[in-house]
Image (cartoon, rainbow, N blue to C red; front, side):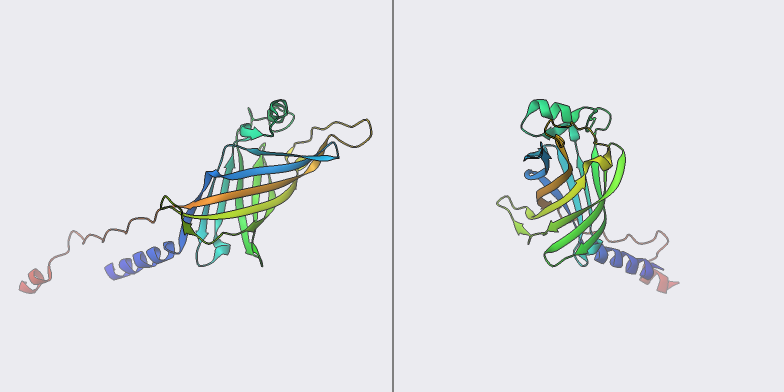
Length: 216
């Protein structure tokens, strides 16, 4: 029985050794978006508060998972009045819905990187989004001794699918705000420290030294 348990433990340690955990370095990352304004130009913005975790399967990247959480109240389009409007019930309604999340459901390899499909939740509405991912980049040590990598993800969505339907008709025709939103995420990643080796299993309480057993 003990041999079986030791074998199971070794198998578990071997499998976990093939996985690595990475977190987004918010000081070197951007969760941004781009949307058409008045049908003639684009407005760029982003969120200043967000976090992300990637559990990377080093043997089979398609088994990896991604979780991103965003604080919509941190939206920043470089215009205070517009930001306040975006925080209001007309758009994100941040007082009622203080968090947005993206959870991956499928990871696929491509010629240049990965395609990550996941569930995006905004205003308690969850719908799938597909992101095209460049990377992860080859890992390296930064000047502070941490192992780092990087990814860039892009995608598109229709804001109306998540209840962001506010708009105004222009005198010349057309709408003030475009429906299609382009997502751009640039993120430097920090690798979590390797877990400490598992302690050797203690002998069972009723186990007796071999010498004592022979005397009997």
